[in-house]
Image (tube, rainbow, N blue to C red; front, side):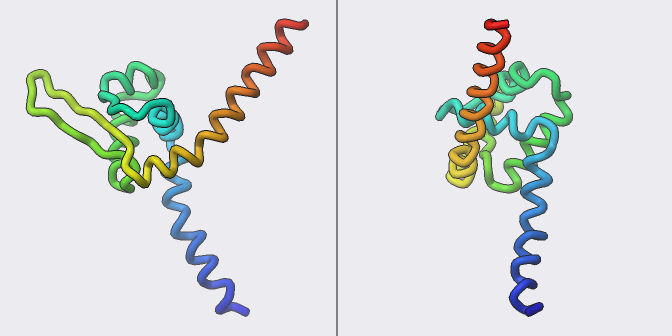
Length: 119
């Protein structure tokens, strides 16, 4: 019996790093941004939208997402420096799994708004 559960436990333990990444401050918000566009997004734009996250935390999250191959970073040799991010194929697959969550959140907000209007 133990031999049947050991691979499953190992799989769960290995997936913990992804769960930890996704639960980090600002990570889902970053991914939600990419769910809404197929275009590259500049760092400055990401920071403008997710302005409650410090620059340091945002840089850390973007680096983690890049390390796990969810996003790719492109730097331009310009002054001032320009950095753009886009989803990798793996990141696109992750974004597709988040779309139902975004849809659900949108519905909940609309329902709450409609309830408040009726009161």
